[in-house]
Image 1: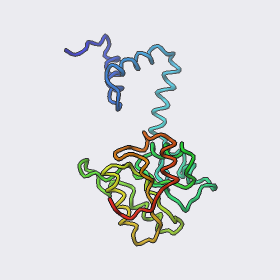
Image 2: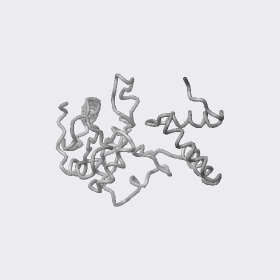
Image 3: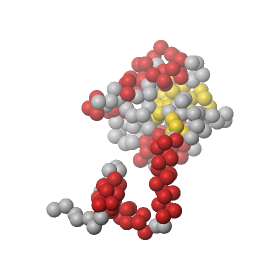
Amino acid sequence: MNQQYPSILLEKAVGEFAKLPGIGRKTAMRLVLHLLRQDTATVEAFGNAIITLKREVKYCKVCHNISDTDICQICSNPSRDASVVCVVENIRDVMAVEATQQFKGLYHVLGGVISPMDGIGPSDLQIESLVHRVEEGEVKEVVLALSSTMEGDTTNFYIFRKLAKTNVKMSVIARGISIGDELEYTDEVTLGRSIVNRTPFTGNI
């Protein structure tokens, strides 16, 4: 039997929170009741932050990272090494690598990995824009830092093939990260060492 809510407004709010990943209806109820206990200004600030994020957030025209401006702070930082580009799956991976403080180059966010089972092909990712960046000539090394899964390895191989004629140096992060692990859940020390100890990528999967 479905839980009976004393208010349709409460039920709708719980339903919206429960749509978030990893949030069940019990957790959603706790979050909604917490917000109800806050003053109106606090709740309005919370809601406005989400609305403003959705309406105004930008994606960097160079690396596709989330940004407040057309070019993100990393790409526009003159102290970063523009000759080295680290290819990652998503924005969370940029944050994970940055947290190691071991990488001083730029990034390229693919927006996912090739996964036929999920209907994600190369054209659904930011691969062509990576090829264009490399073809412009400033990039000397591409560091493949995708998750060590079958999908990640398949994407590595596809990118390797696409860049084969450019003569750019290609490397992959060291396998200090276990097979099947995702970058965002890897501890900073291990991930940092994997970046520093990266090895040449030969196209093998």
